[in-house]
Image: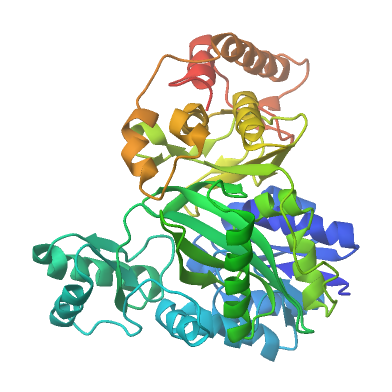
Length: 512
């Protein structure tokens, strides 16, 4: 086992990896930019190394600096988390060539599955069903038009190097094809530095179901079951759950075997995810493989009892997987992504200082967060603040538990997605599991329409607490300059009038 691991990421996932290292008896090393100097992940690690300015292009995306930092502190391995450099073949190769261990798949597997077109080619060779489409990037609009005639409209244009919905366009009529292709290529170039785009037949109303796999260095490749990821906005996942209401034990077995076959074809080692579209007839089609840990990994952990992050580290250190070939889910888990966005205002980013944070608790509630009271939220990075995850024996109980946990969650000072998630939990169609990947776009206007404020009594209590905190620090005898803060996470540094405190604590749709 390793003695020291460097975590090449920030926020909640950095904290998640640091905690896994602590439980394994491994020293952890954080890296941080100027913007993250006071971040929780920096404080919780055993060591921390500054790697550059706030811009990720000058810090978290500078692979050579991260490798240099690992060598500087004597780390033996680097865990990339997700995002940033986690799926960059060149970074995995750089880590390996520097004599360190990359806690993830081999560079060759990342390369094989990193491009959606090459992943489709590999999947087809392995006998994995794929959505009808091309396996090479489009040359121009004329070629796209000829292919569209073969498939019939609607079609889907997708960036070959893409992810997260970037460089993706649905084209329903021939007259829109050329403009949509130009737009997809521009967006792909800006997001990934590669304007290659390919085309697939667009499947109406499918579910997005993915299979978590894990593979060791000794030839074992296991499926850990499915996750339902159909609640999406602009191709970005908002809510995830495991298992899926649409997947029977037999379908789970077939999808798992397919995912394992795809992973074996790529020579895959470590944790990864095969993403599928599941149509209304129960047929499924391979989309892509995410060659990293997924944001939604906690729901799989809760229904399997397997700590994926710890096993990523164990596998990278050469350990064998001790689990049975068939792993069935136990109970139900749901995850909501808590973001610094204002759903009532088009999900615009919200920035500022978190003046007060109260976390939900109780049976079956988990909080994977990267912020605390006093944290400053800027525009430098992804808006995800944390993940709220619950587990219960049944889906109905899990929905009820998530609703209760969201009501307990209190974030004062910035707008967040909390109220949006509450409304989803209250939605009758969601409660029935009657969802597909277009469901949220159809339901969104009602789910984000402002309603009467909730929790007014609780808002008033929080406002009073903020004012009391202010008074305590401004009236203390001999406390000259006490308002400047003393490093305590729950300090309120700026004086608030009663009216201001009320607005912060109870604004919009209740507490954010």
